[in-house]
Image (cartoon, rainbow, N blue to C red; front, side, top):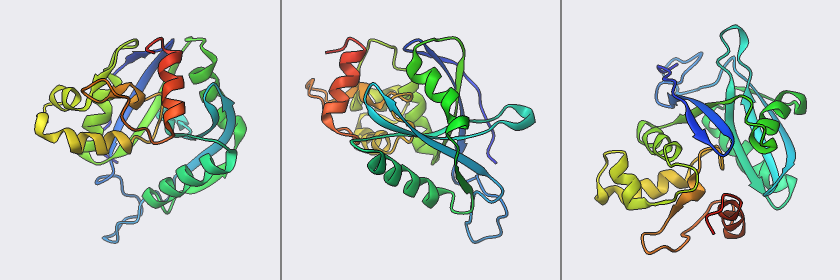
Length: 211
């Protein structure tokens, strides 16, 4: 497992504690075949959210308390959210065991969407080194603010010329809403795109008082 770095960020009534793990380093039961996730249990469940059906994937922390949310997806139906994010996670961690356990993911859902702000939501961000830089940059966008792709590229030290690559990484954000990719707009003020639909992006921005 790659080196974990902890840092706290303030979200909408929510503290997020991310652990960034490079997918290039995350190998268990390895050899040279690139298989990953052996020995890891990932729990998932579906619940209603302010933005439609949401599917959350999480790993429990065990004795060291290193668990957290690996994925959060939205869909117009339970099946849509479930299929897309589970397929992607299985592709990234094909040797992990996936279990439907609503009781395990419910506390994460409650903290994210319940608005209590009473604790922290742990994240396990699994991506390439560049993707992790972009996602950490997203976590640094203050609540009530937006940014654009070029400014985000500058923020992470990639330079304006990397704006397109940054946009692609934003689109691959596995933990939607918590890692606030919805706060990234076009430089001309247009909404740009959103993986889970433009109506949902508008709803999230309105929820945060940005529209």
